Image 1 (cartoon, one colour):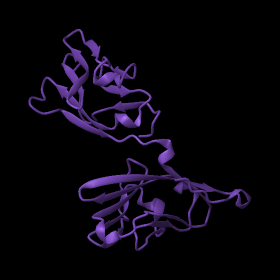
Image 2: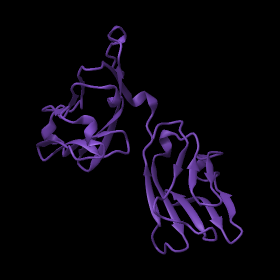
Image 3: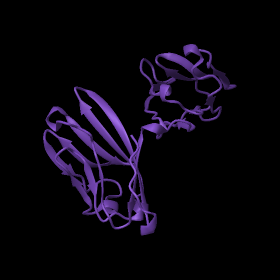
Image 4: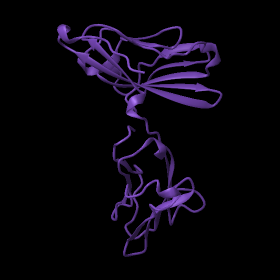
Length: 217
């Protein structure tokens, strides 16, 4: 997620009856709940030092939670509890929120190539490098245990057919780039069970006279 967005937490595949009690927790603290047959809604936006003040909405009918104007400090685990969930949450969401200043922007001419650098000085010390196109799509390239692999059979594999290359340091090169390759590329670097993420916003343009390559740390 990017800061400033409104984010709905929707437990896909789970239907919550309208008369079922619902609780949403963040950091183990109840931040919103729906109770009873009359669906009484309570939003506890004064907890956690009022970090969610005036930024939470609980849908009365569905029980889904909406976080408005999300910030980087809202990153973390959100738990959905219900009358049937017992001793564990019905659903857990992990929300990662990133500042717009954390994005590396790249602009490239249609038909050209662009390399998205990992910035990893020694790849042998990294457990895994994973690349995704857009936040929610399947992986497109992976380095694990020293083995480099581009993954052809992911959702929308046709989009990058024979266009991906992984360099020695895990940097991703996209060749013969087209307009349909415009979008966010997400880099996950895992080291000692800690995962960091980097976002690249790649814009592919048609007009050669407008093309230049910009990178903003």
